[in-house]
Length: 154
Ligand SMILES: [Zn+2]
Image (tube, rainbow, N blue to C red; front, side, top):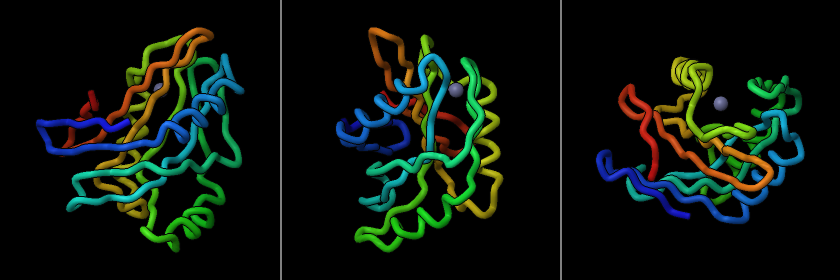
């Protein structure tokens, strides 16, 4: 799927195969939340982001309303993506909202702020993918942090 935000001129692309695998991983933790890191690369003068892979956290805390991942070991995994052609980077995060809409919670917003303020991450426009999953349907909400605001891809 390819999504755009006309207002800020950004587009995002994610392969169905990847999205399906995230949905499956999310399902295996239902009714608790689950998630991980998103990996991809920028093209077209940094205006187009292709999300290609996920890295799952080695340890995490989860409940029906909350998900906290550890970043332990992800640097090493990112290192192997960085050696690929094209070079791939950490571009954002994803998590599920079981039986709920894919709208960011206050916790999600503060988690994004923590990413922005983490000087090691060097990530100016992190992407947040929320998957609203229930037993019968799946909704994707793609967001990007751009100039101090969270925009949703439609
Ligand atoms: Zn959330």
